[in-house]
Figure (tube, rainbow, N blue to C red):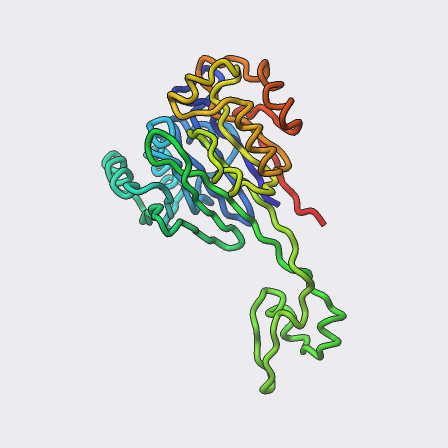
Amino acid sequence: MLKVTLLGTSGMMPTKDRWLSSCLLCANGHSVLIDCGEGTQIAMRRAGEKFKPIDIICITHFHADHISGLPGILLSLCNDGRTEPLTMLGPKGLSKIVSSLCVITPGLTFDIICREYSSGGLIEVIDDITVKAFPVRHGIPCLGYTFMLSRKREFQKEKAIENNVPLRLWSTLHKGKSAEYDGILYTPEMVLGKERKGLKVTYCTDTRPVPTIAENAADSDLFICEGMYGDNDKLPRAKETYHMLFSEAAGLALSAQVKRLWLTHYSPSLNTPEDYLSAAADIFPSAECGTDGKTIELEYTE
C-alpha cells in the first residue's frame, strides 16, 4: 500500500483555505516529503502525519512557496527525536540553499545529505521505494519526481519443492537473496513467480507542459500535476509565468495514460477550482481537484 496526502495546494502564497505546496507519500514505515512550502509542519499536524518517518525530502525548485517551510520541518524532526541522517533531493545548488536556511536551525540532531540533479540524472532508493527526478520547464531549474513502490514476487511453494530447495532457505530466497547450502547454490528464481506490477506516483508542478513529463508519468497510478489556471483564456499568462492550465495538465494525463489525475498548485485568485474542473475532465475524465488534506491509499492490483 502507498498512501498519498496532499498537504498544501496553493501556489505563490497561502489562502485562508490552502497551504503552500507540499505532498507526503508513506509506505512500509517510510515517508517521502515533496516540497516544503511555508506552513508544511502545520499541515502535517492537521493531517495527523508524523515527522520522524520522513527519510527523503524532494525539492522541485527554489522558489519560496516550495521551500520556505523547511526550517520548521527540520526543527520538528529534532523535536521528534530524529538522529538518523536525512536525505534531500533537488536541483543544482541545493546544498547552498539548505545551508543558508539552516542558519536559523542550530543544533540539529541529525545530518543532512544533499543530492543534486545533474546531467546523469538523480535516483534515490530506500527499501522498496525508488525516487527518480526529471527536469521540467520553469523560469529557474525545476524538477518533477516519480515514486515507484516495488512489489515482491509471489513465493511459490510448489516450485520450491519441485526444485528441492531446503525449507530453511525459503525465507531468504523469498527476499530475493541467493543462498548456498551443502555446496549447492540456490537462487530466488527457484522459488519465486513472475514479476508483479508495483505502484507509481508522479508529481509535477511549476512548469509548462513538456514531453518529458508524460514520458516519466507513463502508466502512473496517480499523477499529481499543477493546474495554476482553470480558464483557458489564461494561456498567455500561463506561458509568461511558466505554468499550466487545467486543460494542459489533463492533456499530459491522457498522453501518459495514467489512472487518475489530481490538480494542485492553484493561483491564489482561483477561489473555487471545482468551477473549472470540466476543462480538465472533458479531456481526462478521471481528473479531480486536489484539496489540502486529500488522501488516497493506493493498493496493488492482481
